[in-house]
Length: 105
Image (cartoon, rainbow, N blue to C red; front, side, top):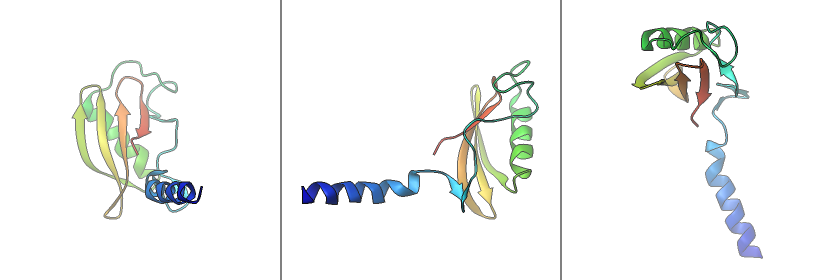
């Protein structure tokens, strides 16, 4: 019984840094974030180009006080690091077909 409590505590401590991607008390990328340039949540008129996706991500995060770091294009998705000053605070994917932005942490 005592060893179970120790193992549970150890697992909780090891997983705590991965529980949420946040800068301070507020989440960097809220669940359900989406590109405002698409018409409705989760729907774009047409799949946006990688360049338009990068522009949208930059605009989305600049409004929140962050900047975009390294960017990778992976088919339908654009993967980007979200930076605060020189520190990476989140890593997200942007779905070019739906306009959704999701943290991958």
